[in-house]
Image (cartoon, rainbow, N blue to C red; front, side, top):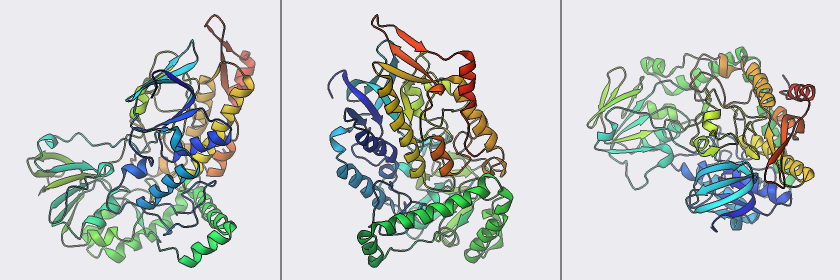
Length: 517
């Protein structure tokens, strides 16, 4: 990388968000951009998570870009290797590799208010960019709890997102910590080969069967010959989930029937009443993400598996100790304890116009205008930002909506002309966030009686979108300039902010509505 190279756009990350942004920039006629990737290949979370049994819980034909349909998905729910191969394919088909800088981890990016650009320090050099698209994703930095004695554990320790494939688990005594989406795939994958598996469960998940099957050669041939059939399949999957979302966001009590189905699913595999009691959640289904598996419960019923209904609290040599005092001797500890979602490490590396980091600006909770722009961070757009997550459908739909917003953001900069930046108004950000949080109050994620990773340290849900994907698509169809301050560079290297009158600003703020409220 050339020292102090300047580009029009710098995209951070090469997962779905980063690659999607790169494709969209190309389609908007922007070719002066780079994709900064800290690893040596594309794929994001689907590169990093390669644990046994890793697969997606969203149907394949919905978990792909609308502009890059795949007629050859081998299964209705794709495995990690298939999704990663798809992202490699997208990279090649859209000729993105010349734009990607591998092994270029962002160490710091700082807004230069005089030059109206971001100065980006990476592990491979420094460059600057007029616009930054942050697509690091919330599921990129693993979280391992601070367990007393863990440092002195003589065996093997790793997180599910950093799986050690050189360490053989066959015949080992293994502690699995956590019962989230990764754990319910890992447990049945490793249970047959380990000597003993001890599962540390703080909170049991609700689990429904995953209706997975191979997609036949005839189906794939049909999709290749008649592309509209792929679109129809995707549309049907999308529509079903849009209808389901209504119960999660507006009528949580209607989910009682789904709870009964989940309990029957458990009862079919778990015959021991005591074990069944430990595995039965005490919160409304949907409050945490509903997990999909046909093999999780049968694996827990095997004689070489112990379910400890308590979290891991201490490690004493090779002995792991639960909060309830239960102990087990183990050779390896696998953490399926999630990621830094509401405290993303990238936020410590972004320094805005007033010298504060994004983490400092978000001390009271993450918030961004339409999930994309943070006040005080001009020409900085995030993909999968605050309150853009989903508990019912495909994140690719949300990503594509934010790509629409990014595209219009670039167009607005072109129309304004010259050296110019857009900085989200604090009033607009607050108005947007206030309406989002108001809608959140009635959702199952806030009323279901659970503690989830959707919540930040203060108990605010800063992760999930409280509506349908269609509503979010409508809310991000364009950039409303009344929600931004327009900052221009002057000949004397000073900047000038174009502001509305007080009355106009208030009017613009009120327009920061949440569609469908």
